[in-house]
Length: 69
Image 1: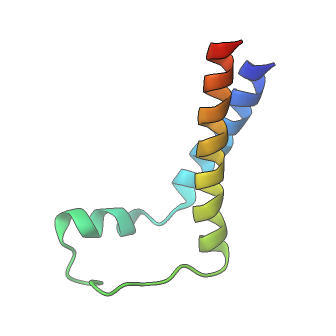
Image 2: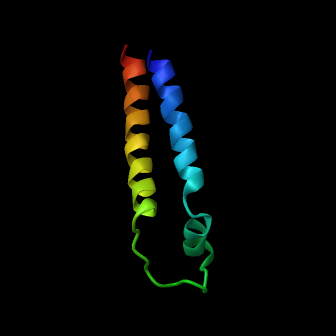
């Protein structure tokens, strides 16, 4: 049962990660000069961001439960 839940959460987590804006992570590493100001997340982008965090925590929790049981 944990394996099926973990697979579903993994697919959802991958989907949310791929939906996030690709340039936001690379601009800090490379030093992107085109958008150096801080931008707040709003609407769907905020939902995707927090959803990714929640699914990551659930995924880790399921992995730990699978180890214990």
